[in-house]
Image (cartoon, rainbow, N blue to C red):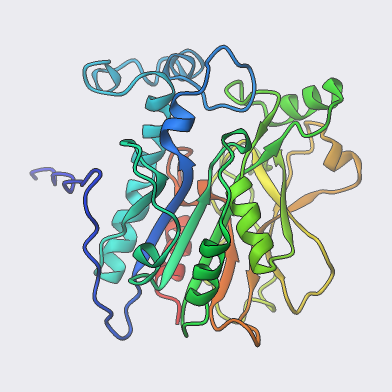
Length: 339
């Protein structure tokens, strides 16, 4: 049987708006980083930057020792690592595109060519579900403007809309270097520096929208004993009245996932649908405080000010950089077909 050729992909192309079709959802992704701001970070800085491809190759050897990642075929430096994110999101785009019948555009706040695209009607007008991937390092100073916050608030007044917020981990906040080292040893990823703080853009957007949640830590999830598969989620199915997690048992393994901490105890405003068991073999300040799970999937149902849903799930849950399975794809399809 002849292997199917991969779909051709656009790059820095002009987005063609998708027409609304009753019963179908148009899904878009907005990546909050400045691509040049991340790619041009000083690689002599130890903290708050992505790895270079040289570092990825060294830590991941020999996985990247193929012609696919040769310098004539693939970006090097930090830019190459950013490209790994895009290739790892392709399956999500393909699966959702097949389910919905619409392509899934991947917007960047500031793209490879330095074009800035605020989160405005150009992104929002033809979207029913918008995923905001909070992968901007705080030091790059990306922040939602009042106009962007108002545009998203207006988007959520439209019936049937869904906003998926994914601020990434927040590692090494404390000044105590011993506690930073404990966090590093806990997650065990040699590519993550002792301080790596993400999500200024999503935090500012959440504050503007009144989402009482904060991304904290980078926690290593537990795995199924004797395997490298992530342990099943602890799911509160009684609260999941919309069926976001129907048919879902687990997400995908990633060494450092954020805890979505609730800033108040109003369970009617924020429903914790999924908690992830933590790897307790590796101490962490969060587990030393008695915690055994972290909040990994939240739902903010519509209220008197908002017709749309807000979900919270880390951006790596939509990536195959660290593997995935049928349960993960079922989660993607649930979001893409929500009613």
